[in-house]
Length: 114
Image (cartoon, rainbow, N blue to C red):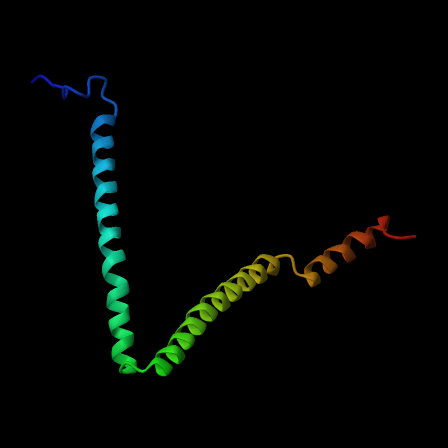
């Protein structure tokens, strides 16, 4: 049995030419999908809002303000809560009571304040 290497892969390493072609192809597909989405999603959203307000400018304005407020405030509030939650878990291991207990034991050994 003889093992034959692929013509572009003489040393047994990765075939960078093939990877580059795949990367360029995937990038092209991604750009096309983004272009199609940028043309269709705003129109779709406008039709959904138009259906909700039945063409009323006042209702459209109020609904737009409501959506803008809610979908801006809720993510910001969630980020703030997540950051506060992470901070409390980081400091939970080094709570003030644990550090005080440790300092009492070290001060009782005679190296404390005078």
